[in-house]
Amino acid sequence: MIVLHMKPKKSFVAIPTKSIILSLLLFSMFLGMGVTCLHADGQAWVSNSLDLKISPTFTVGFQQEQRFNEVTIMDPYLSNIEARIAVKTGKRTQFALAFRREGQTKADSVLRENRLFLDFSWAVLKNKKTTVDLRLRSESRNFEANDGDDHWRFRLRLRLVTKMTVGGIRFDPFLAIEPFGDTKADAINRYRFYAGVTVPLGKNAGFVLSYIRQGTRDKESLDILGTGFKLSF
Image (cartoon, rainbow, N blue to C red; front, side, top):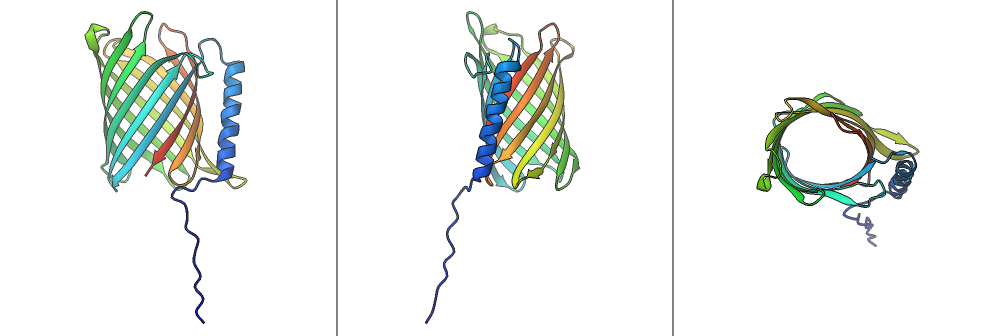
């Protein structure tokens, strides 16, 4: 007598229930903090991305972002969509080229921008649990109908990412700081500080939650609640 043992088929994307619960709890906590603690200039930025790995060295990506004047995700004022290609040039280095189409609502008009940017990324430190990387971004900002002044902008981001597991739940905290400079101001005139966490939702997905502090010369600083999902295949 022959007995066949059949293994149950795994679903295409397995999403751990604990990770979903943690993501919902974190989102509720951050949203509550945002509503009660952030001042009148608090905002919410929702960004979702998809990365498709074509080969070990070549990746195609897409991203859509919506920004809101309220942390309660109301009163949208800016949206953009982005397409990019990334090429690994070594174990720790990568170049990426991207195009972004953006629209921003002003008092009586919509400011439309076509942005082309080039990234160079270098993993200064990389092991199984921790990554420290630098990203230099050069952006060519081009506005339609003379609604803005075309110029170049340069950004340098230093980021720390680590992996942690608590109670069987995996999450990846991160910290980053990024100064901005452009040819319009001819100086470093903006910075962003990032603190957040990515919660993996299976092998191909993750939920990102972050706090962003943005300071700009001659403008009030912004406190920003960032959320979104990342998919990669």
